[in-house]
Image 1 (spheres, rainbow, N blue to C red):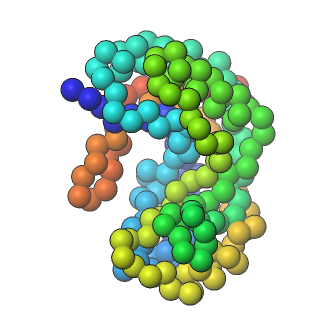
Image 2 (cartoon, rainbow, N blue to C red):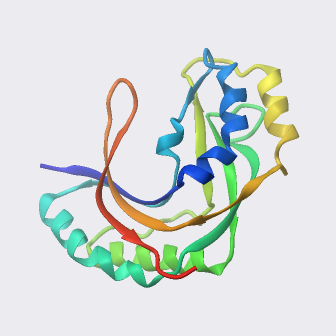
Length: 188
């Protein structure tokens, strides 16, 4: 049986609180947006996709090797959208951090390569998905303006303290995430 997996840094309660104002603003656009529940906010480092039970076992055995990375200080800064603000499909908050995150991403990539996962082709762009635009919905100008007006807003500073291997099960109500393995990042 295959499991749909990814490796991510979850936001803790303090990090989620810092984005509450954006969450509340997006609520006005619920007919257009599918907001991500704040308890599911995370920074994806590597999407592994459908993974065999054998590979899951290997991943679980080697996952602890990533614990040597220290806790990661970051800033939640700016709102943006993919592919572009004028016609978004995904609305995100930017994440700014130092070189420790890049080191962790490289370690995750090396771990995944060793287990047969392909190397990520796109460069890593740290962001936190806040909402997705519902299919066949036009985005109101007021929402585009809100994103544009907040592209440099500093929502706050926080620390990533844990790294998680998640299983994602897709459902009609949205993805459900289960923590398969959790590591505390050492140091501050």
